Image 1: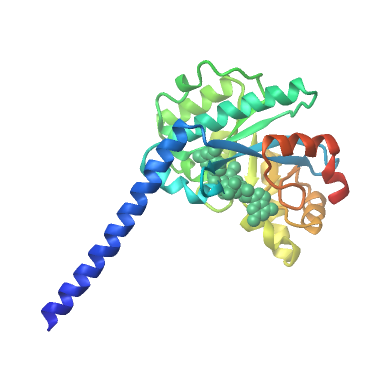
Image 2: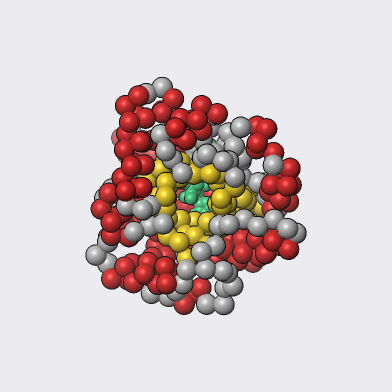
Length: 280
Ligand code: C2E
Ligand code: MG
Ligand code: MG
Ligand code: MG
């Protein structure tokens, strides 16, 4: 009896494991095809000056325009893409298209001061990171790399230190993304000297209910600014969030209350119509 139960369990496990492997294999094949067919595109979410509500930049966020599933956000593909080691290819595709779109906007009379792209943690360990940027055309100071905070755990690593220095030498800004949710955050501010830090939306969400949370966020803003680092708040989901962050001195705001990520056409319409000024 025990033996047959064991075998049933084994067979059940085996069947579900097999299904999982098949599913992953299908997603993996899909991703590789998608890369070939250029299905990974940037959506654009503007960032606003907290006081004037002028657009000061835009974050490019990867979307997979899937032939049958529609437009997919990164949580649907980044994990499998990581297992396939193709995140650098996705990042590259997003970066190229972002530069290309910004040139189109400029030709159409819309100049966005800064384009930010997300760069996966592993890339900073990559000896070829800087070489891989050869051939890209951008003006100094108009391009920014958002780096997840967790990478700065290894701030003694020579490749990381050299890569950051060379990015800055190329005129590419370095930002720390999701600040406040990882480790070694304060130390990384001094060691990396990022142009900007982005306070994670988990820290921003509770500021409307909690005075101590407001104090905490205000202190992070002070620390950043005292080091000459601009501070961005992510996850501005209401007008109240926007007002509070402005009042405690945050430089830049990003979030659904002001604008959601949009495709290139929607984005240029949005900017031309100055749609956020009536919404916010
Ligand atoms: P992130 O870089 O921290 O980007 C912010 C995420 O918050 C985006 O999710 C954005 O759509 C979402 N968001 C913006 N405003 C609000 C708001 O007011 N409320 C809420 N609840 N969410 C808001 P998304 O686009 O799903 O991206 C998720 C993560 O995937 C990004 O987090 C980033 O870590 C990663 N990612 C996105 N694009 C790329 C890429 O091209 N390359 C790499 N390596 N990672 C990427
Ligand atoms: Mg980001
Ligand atoms: Mg973030
Ligand atoms: Mg994030």
